[in-house]
Length: 321
Ligand SMILES: Nc1ncnc2c1ncn2[C@@H]1O[C@H](COP(=O)(O)OP(=O)(O)OP(=O)(O)O)[C@@H](O)[C@H]1O
Ligand SMILES: [Mg+2]
View 1 (cartoon, helix red, strand yellow):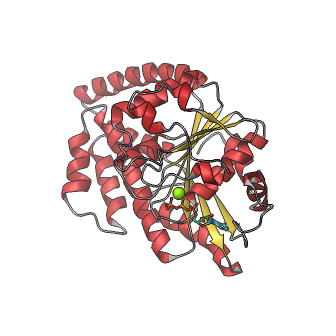
View 2 (view 1 turned 90 degrees about the vertical axis):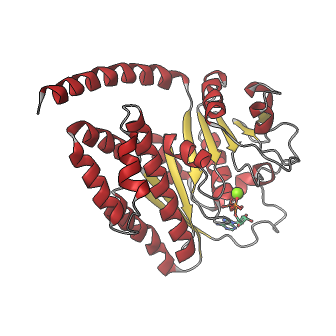
View 3 (view 1 turned 180 degrees about the horizontal axis):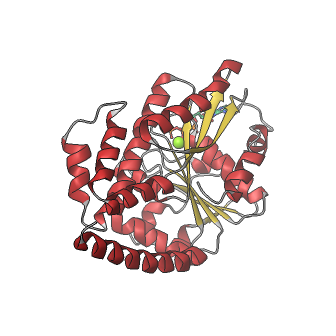
């Protein structure tokens, strides 16, 4: 190792010590962020995020369920509520404070930040607004924020997903859904690596290694990750750190046949082998008949029918992922 690399390492260490102090201070104030994403539409992201939020509240946590599906918000309907009076767009437009857009629900311990159902031109989050939102959460007096990120791989969705403490990806056992999920988690990981490297002005390396050249669909990503790591020990550390923070949980939803319960294991192997991503847990959820037509069905009954109690508990208690 030459002198400049040693001094870089030392500087890097100092930055990390300072960062850890900031992160620790931040951790004590900020609620834990759970993000539910997955790329493909209609797989069950809203169904699962609302059920998780209900279950967390049942387990005694103070929870905010946040509808960040800016194009097609509907979490209020999953919670059996009418059209929301206030939405996240009112906060983004600075019409209302965060406190004013946190709406009560019928479930104890659970509040809702709704999406805007009236607008024709949803704005969504820009970088600064997302940070303002996260900073404001310090005063929200809740333990956990569960966000539904909607379909698609927009940067605003990937940013929240890659930053979240608990990352949950929803798929159905169909090739199209698995394909979109693969693209989603890959882009999210790249976003996360970019963030780490940009802090040290190494971003141009990501540009060269991943973006300008076409990455082979299966093996290319891992090869280039390895090449990136070989550039220097510091870069290797940053890339490893991003991978360490990028652990995901998989929910395979709408299972109808026994054989489909193999899906989670296949996905786990694919993500590890091709993207070096650790899947911390997989959960298979059956398709519930008469989901909307049963008149006795409400959000709490739905959440209990899909049997997520122990899965949610294990995510909650998990030190990582
Ligand atoms: N396990 C399940 N059993 C029965 N119905 C389900 C299940 N999962 C989802 N659904 C139903 O399937 C439909 C699609 O689910 P949901 O709206 O949660 O998908 P989504 O991923 O949020 O879609 P979008 O990307 O459009 O927001 C909904 O009507 C939902 O109630
Ligand atoms: Mg949805």
